[in-house]
Image 1 (cartoon, one colour):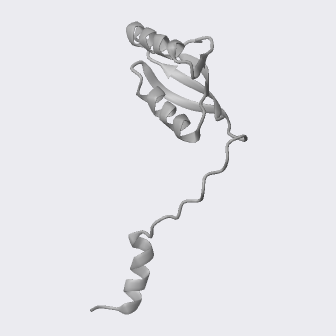
Image 2 (image 1 turned 180 degrees about the horizontal axis):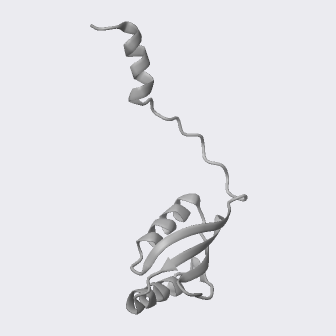
Image 3 (image 1 turned 135 degrees about the vertical axis):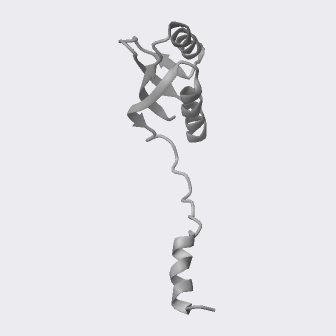
Length: 103
């Protein structure tokens, strides 16, 4: 289960900040800490890495959330994903084309 400790920077605008706080408190994947100035510590827990990544995007997109910063991340009990092969870039192909010279 991926677990992260995050610090969210919330808007100074009270309606936006309050809407973000309400949304965060209503989300069972998020444990909300005490707001100090504009900084809000939260802990997130999800079942999979894909769900974890999706949650991060959701948090960053919330009205009233200005920034998401990582303080701690543990995914030690999650199976490692299969390595992904990176497709070749144009830079990797350009050396080969340069060796052939003009056509």
